[in-house]
Image (cartoon, rainbow, N blue to C red; front, top):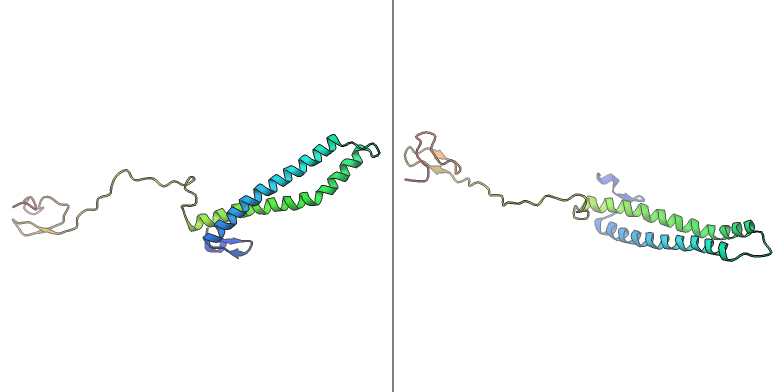
Length: 148
């Protein structure tokens, strides 16, 4: 993901802003799902328990659905905007920091301590040739480096 794709509806966001919008979109999802379920259950309960004697059943159900339709559209649009914001802000926050998504991409924990080799130069006491810190024996004369 490059810098040009880090937009939310055309606005450039920082990591802090994307985390805040991420939290707001989670709240928006819960509220919109709750209200959509409440409206659907209201229509179902009214159609089951309220049976007017002076209207045919089809007319009453259609009238109730048309009465709830604007609210259903508003909360459906809110649901999809919150879902889009949730997905988009997660990607933006993940781009800025790998700590946002540790469960999907775990980093391996090293089981050992890495020891860096000593790069001090040593001289052979027998022939005077310079050796690296990792070499124990002189390649020129075979004398053990570091010991007299």
